[in-house]
Image 1 (cartoon, rainbow, N blue to C red):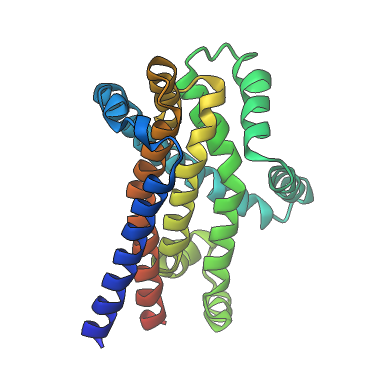
Image 2 (cartoon, rainbow, N blue to C red):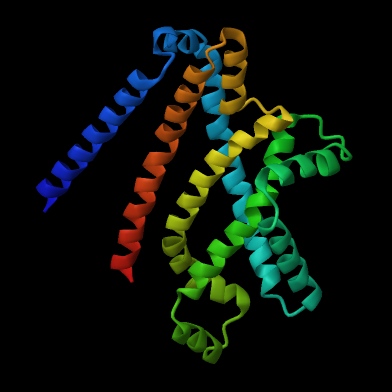
Length: 248
């Protein structure tokens, strides 16, 4: 089974490599195709690549905290708190990422005198991802057997005891795959921070394109670099999904 799987993956890899080679050779301007012009600014490329990873990890951490807070609000007995969580989530789900980032920058960061664009971008994108993290927590918690909740009620557990001893230990296992998927979404979405001047990968490659006029080459390099970050995460998410299924 493992040999067949490795063989099939090898065939798929050969197919995609051949496809990339074909696209390059089929490109009408291949005579002027200059990847070296892009890689000549490797210092800028590396800076953008590293900034994208740093931004994504910070947004993941902050949005996890905000998402869990939104989840707790959505389960509150106070209707006002519940509506705050639900309305904010619906607003985010109905707003394109780019639109929200720009609105958050000009109507939250600028009025609060947050002049650091990196920080402003992290805040805006963390707010945007928080409802998606809330849904991840909801899905993971709902996967816990209802009989356990009944047992906790019978035993008189407080909310703290429920989360500390029963829910969170199981939650950590179940929530890993959706968190990894959300991280991949964050990495791809971080390119939109270019529009508020954050120096992530997209921003730095557009800088290189403006200096070298290697527009097509720049987009190809960008495409490959994003895949280098996101593809391992997708495979990792699938791995943990199988692990979770075996645990359940």
